[in-house]
Image 1 (spheres, rainbow, N blue to C red):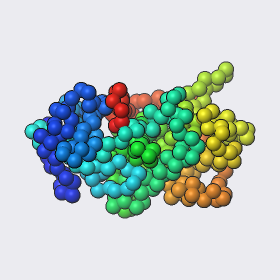
Image 2: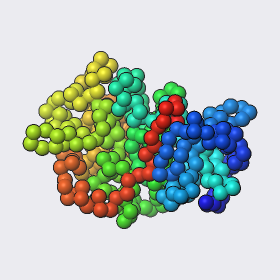
Image 3: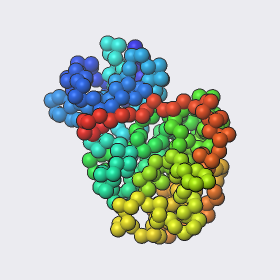
Image 4: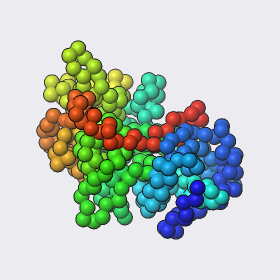
Length: 343
């Protein structure tokens, strides 16, 4: 499946022989995972020994082909310390391959949802990760050569380097906005349910505020160590956003926090962080802050925060659930990590 060389010649090209040598001819032992795009391998460029991650487009994946074209057109023109770096590509002998910097600590979800590894992330490290993600998103929305809406922000798409710095990855679903564009709409909703904003999941409308909503969901997952799924109680069910809202209203914010963090943060810090997250997951896009606002809130600890309204409770709205399920297409970017360390 040949997709043709991209027009942007700033992106280095690698020969297929170089990639085969780096991955030991795509050896099973080097396979890191598999997604809708295709398999991902760990490799080592010879002779210098630089470690790389190799995304190999599946020859039968139409979704992967679309993501390949989109990703290569977007990320090759981006450069920020909180975005995963695309080192080059290989389009040769019916192969379509993307080569990235290798992230030895895999993805964020492999830490925060793991009962053993989560203890390695204290409050300060988690806040550094939150701040890094915010900086990366702000760059995409405002400061890059392109204005980009990611559309698939989630913890499995945040990779961690050797120092636990976060890097936003997987731009296959991203959309580029023109200078005068403020929002877009699609009949093919892509992404991951639970991270999607209400207006996107139900009506296919997306904007910078869609990414802000996803960021808010990730913030709650990072500080709680829980996934945004429904939690069933005696007479009702709430997702993680609903739990956060109720605890914040009742002055019990510390109960949302991951129990492993109890000795590394104060109730004031946790309450402020939850309030900020609630602002990001407001039902209406116009009520959410911009990523510029979020970065200001994170950097200025004395800045007064607005009071949030009740957020979007997806698990409460059967109409929204059924409407979005008719239209949405789950991301093919979900990667199942194998036993090989890193990604």
